[in-house]
Length: 434
View 1 (cartoon, rainbow, N blue to C red):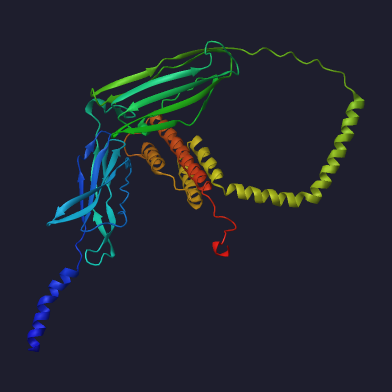
View 2 (view 1 turned 90 degrees about the vertical axis):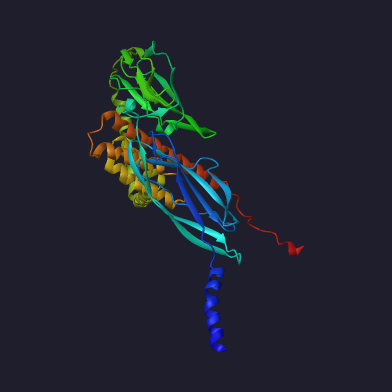
């Protein structure tokens, strides 16, 4: 009788283990297309299904890659459910938008998705990981637009310029302000290259401000504006011309290359009035002796104070200097200086130092655009292809400057929000005492 019972136990053990083992989550990925025009999105969708429910959202990989912008639009994630083996499984579906920035093939790394779901039998949370396989996407410019440098594709684009000042009536030292606005539909404004004020003209000084990017989204359609402001100061008398500015782009609707432009600006600058030379005065020896004695007295007093308080003051200023040099603002200024001098190695090093200081301060800005801008510049400077043009390099430096300013704006905004968090009361009232 006992051997028969043992045999029955061995027969039922697999069935018991299978009943206790929870069904594994299902993860499906779909890429609707793997090739897009640079600046246009490819939709990569991930669907996660579990037999019960997920008490916490799944943790997805970042899918970041060089020269690819990865974005999650509004309402990118949505709940979903399916019938699996006769049972209803619930889950979430998430759609990523992948934008190739330049022509080429780019490998998107996969990675694990961390999923937490309720056990069907015990309702206790189970945590598991499911790997997503890497894949590749391609950015391909149309044949008619392959010579566009830089490449820009959109459904619609306009270029306007506003002049504040009187170009035809300036005096040396006067200034006028050029505000250039590029409005784009069907592409993110971050893909719009800088226009600027053209090649600098000798006799005029240029003071550009950081460009302002504004993006909107309506039912999946991205549009926005890039606004550039530059102040031009006339240094010398004469006549000058700010050249016509052009921007060529590929129209996704008409499938043609189109060009927009703003007209040239002629400046007429007159010289400032010549100041009358002051008449020389006879030397007043008594007055000179009086002021000389006063200067000696002040010098003696200053030396006495310096001897007494100098070491303390020097230590104070050294401590203040060290404190200032340890701030995020000081690191950001050093980065801007490296960008202005167009020193790639120094800019990379200063960018990492600035990032470490922001991380230490608890800021969490989005570094994606700045990292892509550095990658684009590195490829333009040291790529294996033909050397990049000076326009491409200048545009890459401008994009780095814009992205760095945007990162600091995000960090300052987060700091202001943290400062508004209400503090707990200093003297809480114990209700049991009343």
